[in-house]
Structures are given as C-alpha cells and as structure tokens.
Image (cartoon, rainbow, N blue to C red; front, side, top):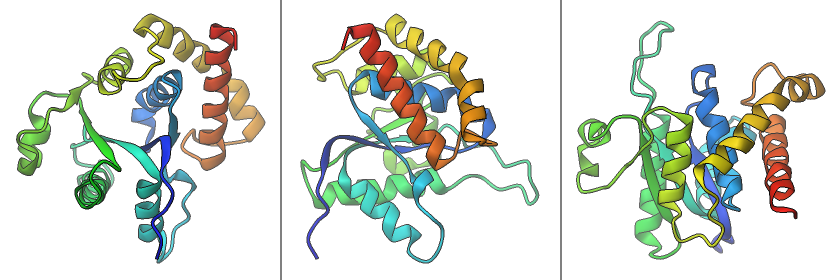
Length: 204
C-alpha cells in the first residue's frame, strides 16, 4: 500500500475536546493559522471500526503534530477515569516518526513543567513546550516550536486575532447551529475565519 502524501504545512492537533479546554482550542487554531500552518484534527473522523486506521492515516499525512498532555485529571463523570486518547495518539505519531525519519516532527505541550515526564517516563529527555494553561502561553510556545517558520508574527499580533475571533463566536454559533465548537463544520469555519483575520492584518 502506498504511503499517504504528506502535506508540508499541516499539523495534527491532538487535544482534549471539552468546554474547559475551549480557550486553548481556539488559541491553537489561531496560533497555527498565524504561522501559516493548517490545523488538522480527528473531529471530522466518524466512529466505527475503521476510526483508528483513519486517525493513523491523518497523522501520516501531516508533517507535524502537537500533543497536548495537560489533561491528566480524572473525569468527573462516573466512573472517574483519566483521558488516555492524547498519549495514545502521541504514541502513534512517535512510532510513525521513528519508522520514517524526516517525515514527521512531533511536539508535546503541557501546563506544568516536568509533569509529562512523570506521567509518561519514556518521555524523559524530551523538551516539552510549557504553556502554563494560558492562551498567551500557547501562542508563545507555538512560536518556539515553529521558530524556523518564515512567517513569524509576534504574540501581541496573535492575541489580537484571537480576541477578534472570540468576538465572532456568537454569530458563528448561530450560523452553524452548533451546540459546541468541537464539531467538524465549526472547526473548519474557525480555521477559515482565522485565516481571513490573518490575511486582513497583513494586507493579503
């Protein structure tokens, strides 16, 4: 079977999908778009037996991946359970990168320093991007992770478009009829609007 074609500016975004993470979810979308990168996520992948295969295929098509491991708390919904999707998908990306040198670069983002190395000791020796659970921290660490990108807006510029996108959310929710921002259609709309805001600022 031929390997999927790698999209050079695509970033697989491995994050929690819940309301408490909404601010950082928007920060990742805006920040990556500001860096002229295209976020990709599992939101558009349907359930079923082929879901895992499709997640792995999505990882293979992305040149980069970001794995936010900051959600280590137990879920409040009985039975209390930690969230394992993020470290599981990190393992898929790490395995792909090991087997295909130079094809995929992965980054681990976290809230607290050294916590990821404690929860997954195999990550010892890995430098994580610590965002402190803050929107500005995500913007800062995205710039650090992609420091070699030619397009390098500063954090205040990125925050300006983040705030602009937040103000547009009520209208976006009305137009889509979405109950949550974590839906495939809304995800695509957020990327489109973030790109328009970036291009408007740059005069494009």
